[in-house]
Image (cartoon, rainbow, N blue to C red; front, side, top):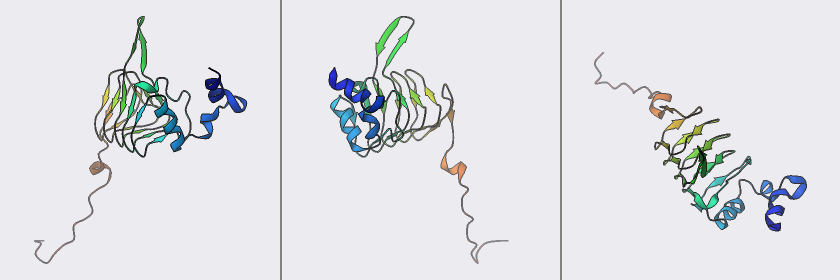
Length: 159
């Protein structure tokens, strides 16, 4: 209990974790607490409050990035308290003020934009972009955002 109090409230209430955010040390800390975290993961470069409430129920894939987002593995709905796994697969991104609730899954390469809420049990599809609260799907495929470059004309083209 005393070490937890030091970690969370040392240095005038800021805690030790504020000074290692975004680094490999924070990843190691959450691995020690039981989180399954892949390689090259960036956790909370801008901090978060709370960071992870139940790290032993969180799975994060390789090269994922979780910014100032809440990853919450518990839910209390109509007096029923339950704990469920939260999965953030490889190369997924959770931007600032995003919340992933208990049982939520963010598939490979998906992006949850700012102020997005992924409800309990929802799945963010692979390589999709989500925004708003609760999160509807937005199709921002690269082919729609970046027009194809003009094709060079050759001498065989018919005019």
